[in-house]
Image 1 (cartoon, rainbow, N blue to C red):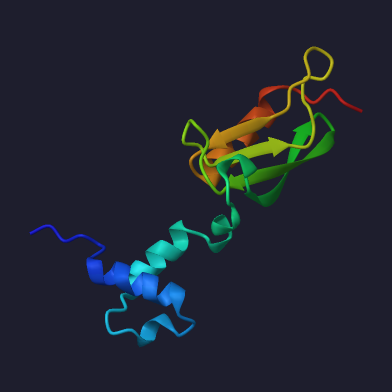
Image 2: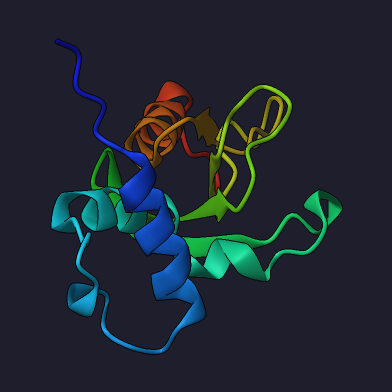
Amino acid sequence: MNVSPFNICDFFCLFVAISLPERAEDFPCYNPVTFRVLEKTMAEWTFAQTQPSDELAQLHFYSINKREGDRTIEFRITVREYATPNHLNMRFFAEADKHTNQKTAPYTPCGWGQTLLQALADCVKAIHRFPYEGE
Protein backbone atom coordinates (compact mmCIF):
# COMPACT_ATOMS: atom_id res chain seq x y z
CA MET A 1 0.00 0.00 0.00
CA ASN A 2 1.44 3.38 -1.00
CA VAL A 3 1.22 5.98 1.73
CA SER A 4 1.43 9.61 0.69
CA PRO A 5 3.26 11.94 3.12
CA PHE A 6 0.35 14.40 2.76
CA ASN A 7 -3.34 13.68 3.08
CA ILE A 8 -6.37 15.91 2.79
CA CYS A 9 -6.52 16.40 6.55
CA ASP A 10 -2.95 17.71 6.56
CA PHE A 11 -3.77 20.28 3.91
CA PHE A 12 -6.98 21.30 5.67
CA CYS A 13 -5.07 21.80 8.92
CA LEU A 14 -2.39 23.78 7.11
CA PHE A 15 -4.93 26.22 5.68
CA VAL A 16 -6.78 26.51 8.96
CA ALA A 17 -3.50 27.02 10.85
CA ILE A 18 -2.43 29.76 8.45
CA SER A 19 -5.75 31.57 8.66
CA LEU A 20 -6.08 31.41 12.46
CA PRO A 21 -3.58 32.81 14.95
CA GLU A 22 -3.85 29.77 17.27
CA ARG A 23 -1.18 27.12 17.68
CA ALA A 24 -1.18 24.42 15.00
CA GLU A 25 -0.80 21.73 17.68
CA ASP A 26 -4.34 22.50 18.90
CA PHE A 27 -5.96 21.11 15.75
CA PRO A 28 -7.10 17.46 15.92
CA CYS A 29 -5.48 16.48 12.61
CA TYR A 30 -2.13 18.25 13.24
CA ASN A 31 0.76 16.31 11.73
CA PRO A 32 4.17 17.63 12.90
CA VAL A 33 6.04 15.89 10.06
CA THR A 34 3.92 17.62 7.42
CA PHE A 35 4.36 21.01 9.04
CA ARG A 36 8.14 20.56 9.32
CA VAL A 37 8.42 19.57 5.65
CA LEU A 38 6.34 22.53 4.49
CA GLU A 39 8.18 24.91 6.79
CA LYS A 40 11.55 23.88 5.34
CA THR A 41 10.44 24.00 1.70
CA MET A 42 8.32 27.18 1.78
CA ALA A 43 10.05 29.95 3.68
CA GLU A 44 7.71 32.65 4.91
CA TRP A 45 9.62 35.47 3.17
CA THR A 46 8.88 33.98 -0.28
CA PHE A 47 5.22 34.96 0.05
CA ALA A 48 6.16 38.67 0.09
CA GLN A 49 6.85 38.52 -3.65
CA THR A 50 3.74 39.56 -5.57
CA GLN A 51 5.16 39.26 -9.11
CA PRO A 52 7.88 36.91 -10.40
CA SER A 53 9.47 39.87 -12.20
CA ASP A 54 10.26 41.36 -8.76
CA GLU A 55 12.95 38.66 -8.33
CA LEU A 56 12.76 38.85 -4.53
CA ALA A 57 15.82 37.16 -3.03
CA GLN A 58 17.24 36.40 0.37
CA LEU A 59 20.99 37.02 0.59
CA HIS A 60 23.53 34.65 2.19
CA PHE A 61 27.12 35.83 2.72
CA TYR A 62 30.32 33.75 2.73
CA SER A 63 34.05 34.37 2.65
CA ILE A 64 36.92 32.32 1.24
CA ASN A 65 40.66 32.95 1.19
CA LYS A 66 42.61 32.16 -1.97
CA ARG A 67 46.36 31.64 -1.61
CA GLU A 68 48.48 33.02 -4.45
CA GLY A 69 52.18 32.70 -3.74
CA ASP A 70 52.94 34.45 -0.45
CA ARG A 71 49.71 36.45 -0.27
CA THR A 72 46.14 35.68 0.70
CA ILE A 73 43.20 37.22 -1.15
CA GLU A 74 39.80 37.26 0.52
CA PHE A 75 36.80 36.76 -1.74
CA ARG A 76 33.36 37.55 -0.40
CA ILE A 77 30.59 35.51 -1.96
CA THR A 78 26.96 36.59 -2.02
CA VAL A 79 24.40 33.87 -2.67
CA ARG A 80 20.98 35.04 -3.76
CA GLU A 81 18.15 32.66 -2.90
CA TYR A 82 15.30 33.66 -5.19
CA ALA A 83 11.67 33.25 -4.14
CA THR A 84 10.89 31.65 -7.52
CA PRO A 85 13.33 29.67 -9.69
CA ASN A 86 14.50 31.10 -13.02
CA HIS A 87 13.62 29.59 -16.43
CA LEU A 88 16.29 26.90 -15.93
CA ASN A 89 14.76 25.90 -12.57
CA MET A 90 17.73 27.38 -10.71
CA ARG A 91 16.91 29.08 -7.43
CA PHE A 92 20.37 30.01 -6.12
CA PHE A 93 22.97 32.32 -7.67
CA ALA A 94 26.40 32.86 -6.08
CA GLU A 95 28.74 35.66 -7.13
CA ALA A 96 32.17 36.75 -5.86
CA ASP A 97 33.01 40.38 -5.09
CA LYS A 98 36.32 40.36 -7.03
CA HIS A 99 37.38 39.54 -10.57
CA THR A 100 40.05 36.99 -11.45
CA ASN A 101 42.18 36.88 -14.61
CA GLN A 102 42.18 40.72 -14.65
CA LYS A 103 45.12 41.22 -17.05
CA THR A 104 43.82 38.94 -19.80
CA ALA A 105 40.02 38.90 -19.65
CA PRO A 106 38.44 39.84 -16.33
CA TYR A 107 36.18 37.10 -15.02
CA THR A 108 33.66 37.34 -12.18
CA PRO A 109 33.45 33.96 -10.43
CA CYS A 110 29.85 32.82 -10.08
CA GLY A 111 27.67 29.73 -9.90
CA TRP A 112 24.03 28.72 -10.33
CA GLY A 113 22.29 25.83 -8.64
CA GLN A 114 19.08 24.26 -7.47
CA THR A 115 20.56 24.26 -3.96
CA LEU A 116 22.62 26.76 -2.01
CA LEU A 117 25.44 24.21 -1.77
CA GLN A 118 25.57 23.68 -5.53
CA ALA A 119 25.70 27.41 -6.33
CA LEU A 120 28.29 28.11 -3.62
CA ALA A 121 30.49 25.16 -4.65
CA ASP A 122 30.41 26.23 -8.32
CA CYS A 123 31.43 29.77 -7.33
CA VAL A 124 34.34 28.47 -5.20
CA LYS A 125 35.53 26.33 -8.13
CA ALA A 126 35.31 29.40 -10.39
CA ILE A 127 37.44 31.41 -7.94
CA HIS A 128 40.19 28.81 -8.25
CA ARG A 129 39.84 28.52 -12.05
CA PHE A 130 41.92 31.63 -12.88
CA PRO A 131 44.70 33.52 -11.08
CA TYR A 132 43.99 36.71 -9.17
CA GLU A 133 46.04 39.38 -10.93
CA GLY A 134 44.91 42.42 -8.97
CA GLU A 135 46.96 44.52 -6.59
